[in-house]
Length: 470
Ligand SMILES: Cc1cc2nc3c(=O)[nH]c(=O)nc-3n(C[C@H](O)[C@H](O)[C@H](O)COP(=O)(O)OP(=O)(O)OC[C@H]3O[C@@H](n4cnc5c(N)ncnc54)[C@H](O)[C@@H]3O)c2cc1C
Image 1 (cartoon, rainbow, N blue to C red):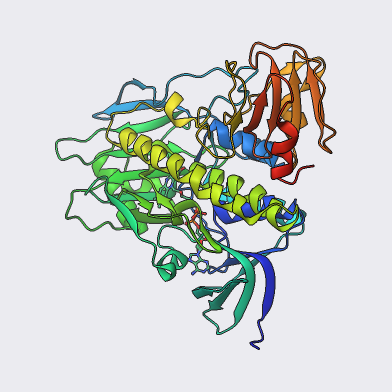
Image 2 (cartoon, rainbow, N blue to C red):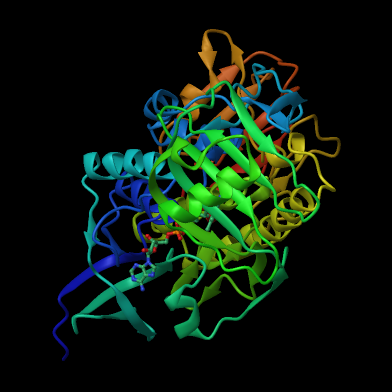
């Protein structure tokens, strides 16, 4: 028998936002998991800087929202510059006002490196672990588990593995799963985190192209003294990511001098692409985050969709590994997440091409799983919240629903009815009729979507039994 360097229940490959979020969700469920990370440290750049409202709700549930709030800020209003003068404001997004049902309506800007640090701290606090400097080079699976090979020759054994290893996923390639997609834009782009003098931090500074589509935008990164510089180049250009390269493009396209860029802390080049993995699962291995879908950065959806993948998969792995649920539950991960990823790819490509406005479409609050085999709507005439929908927040009778939902459990909610309930070992909340929900009995999943909905609890016990909640 082969000696493995370590065995674990879930091997998560990659400590980006996806791997860290999944690590947290599994750690709080008491699932033994290990996050492998090729690099010696967390990713240092700001790239996915926009946290959408739905992601803020997830972060609230995972216990990191106060830290995320403290690390960032709201998006500044765009300021268009022409010939060194302010030519007018540009609002990037439809305005949004927080409501009782959606308390975090506005996107929140946090540099990705800070989000990752906060997630990593939370993971560590919960007893989870990232093995830095551990590169996976290949993976095989059999009926009982997965064997991963590392670059240093060690092997690891796990019951399940999750590819959270980004757009160039080694895991996806070693499984032979294809990606279908296209370049969203043939023009290469530069993205850089820089310290810059001579620009205020109250606006997102936009320097429109002067004839050759050579766009430049400089955004103050909330919660830091840095700016994120994004520049687009002609199709055949080579992007220079050095300090000199960043100085050159900033000076050529704005009123700033080269020396106004005092420091470049991180820089990268990319060509906006959209692609979707042909499958999100192969046996005991799941693809999540950029390993499963890559987006144009324009709509700010890549990181957010990735976090939602991890949040969908975490409770299902926990239910199978710790809760005695049937392993068939895991099939609902691809069933639920692949259509959402396909939809969000359409949105981010649409934003990139100027066909979709940032706002309702990009906040991810309207996403849900009505068509999922896990969603059971038993009412002939459902109210405003159907089975499969996101369970909105509400305050009634001294209860805030998001407080009741917070944690790894399911929640049984009755609204405006005193109908009898089966004796399920779940937190139960009873509130009076409420405009957001209407009336009914709702079983809310650990990831905040309604699994089952009824006028009475008839059929609820059977649903709970299927999922081993009883
Ligand atoms: C230039 C750029 C700008 C972007 N801007 C935005 C934006 O504005 N908004 C937004 O929402 N998203 C944006 N994104 C996308 C966002 O950054 C990604 O969607 C997000 O990082 C995906 O998270 P992930 O954890 O799935 O993958 P990643 O963040 O790529 O993390 C994967 C991790 O896996 C590790 N890894 C890879 N291979 C191995 C291996 N073989 N063994 C062990 N570890 C491995 C990597 O080192 C890395 O740490 C941008 C992306 C880019 C490239």
